[in-house]
Image 1 (tube, rainbow, N blue to C red):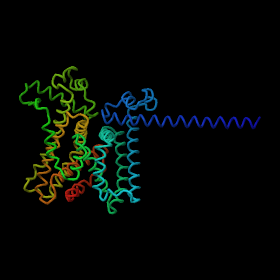
Image 2 (cartoon, helix red, strand yellow):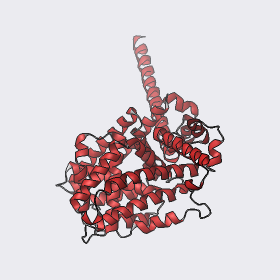
Image 3 (spheres, one colour):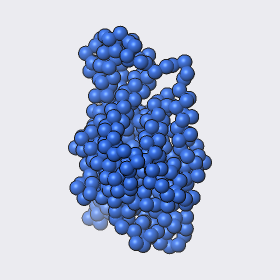
Image 4 (cartoon, helix red, strand yellow):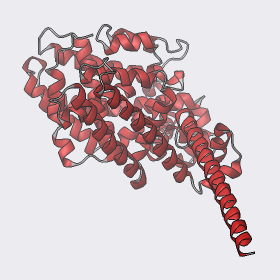
Length: 428
């Protein structure tokens, strides 16, 4: 009897452990499916569009499963962020292993790595990349979001530095960090434009000028729609439009572009629910108007800074000083407005109706950079240099407004801009 009892107990314990492992495996599988479903929702609809129901639909699980595994929306966001980060780090560790073993020979410089990661982000990893941009922008809106963004950047800096040293043994941590910012900036620059892979590759290689492409997108705006001239509108009508646009901007600052609806805007503007629809026929039109308002404000700020130096007096040192000063102001004084700006900006990746507005913003900035860089002379293609400077500015700004970069990070800003200007852009 004792032996039999012992055997029975052992058998029961064994079956219990098997059942526990089965339950644990199912839990892991379900939670992973939910995180992946959340990634799809984030890419398509943004943080504001992420609900338990939407995630359950995208993940192919029951609504009860999402609420059982994740109590709150913030928990789903954290799980999606962690899943994305783990996948990214795993892929980079494998890449590092291949490079160290001599099996990966595509990369002879950090620029090669930047180009490949951007091509992947715009191409095969588009959904994950868009979800990441949404999560990073979300980071600037709350302490929890900033903590997630800081975790991302800390681990990105570490793995990129490891790979940078394999590609360029003398590479510094600053150079690896700057390469990340350039990659992020190029990703934000290119995603909304809806370009194909060959075109993106030519742009990244400096073989095409992005200016004509931006001009073409701007011209694609429906010619039957003309921009509203506020000065020609009745005063009350114009005031109401401006009130609606400001209400939309306030919502975008707090929550993102996906949070815009007629009802939400009407409430924020102190109007009846049907009010915004009278002034803006579609949500896309309202978003486009808000985007242009945000850009015009930023452009006015840039003009004030650049107007202090006559174009004929610009040299490399003064251009770097001005660029760095403008960057600090945008990051430290207008961070939340820039979160709103780039939130609408990235919606254009999913909504082609917004692309002309974003392209117009990019084109104006690109022309300004090209003019000032042309004044410096040199043999490098100005269009390629301008796009890189513009992208680095965007990428560094995203890091600061999302993850609250430390003083040491801010102190590297001028050196990073200087490295771009001093780089030969004739490589393919």
